[in-house]
Image (cartoon, rainbow, N blue to C red; front, side, top):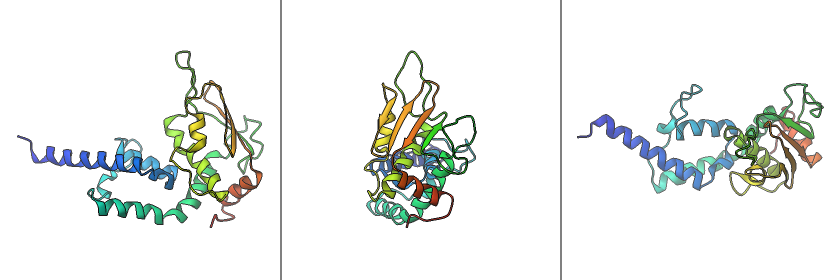
Length: 214
């Protein structure tokens, strides 16, 4: 006989699995900052308490047509807040932290040419494809999303986006999209060049708190 505690656990895990599938299928990550995505993963993939996060599955309603629509509308209504929040978060992430990379010529803004360590999975002889580390994927896709938005193109069409897709399972170590060129190295470093100076200027302006995307 299954006890009440076991039934409650099964209900919670079913709810967790259902919402995890719905969020991925509806591609709602496009509307989330990297920090919100991290907290979502803590809820959906059992990472809660790893960094002091609470298990947020109780914040989600029971699955129904009405609750799905409510959650989608909630994310859609938060789009204006998301844009500036995401820009400032990614600006903090991509701004140079150390002086060891000479290409990162500007200390207090994101440079046209960025060198960022530990973005890519270190290469090994058994698997020579370049891949973005799982816990850094949201930063790559959100940066891409931001430049699409700043260019008036709207949100990227999936939560991966062209840049992350170009970097994943990459055999050549080089990738190019509408807004970026990228070189990947065996030590996990990513060299990223931003192709649009006008969008970079806007990104820096909003990132340091001197402007808004709206």
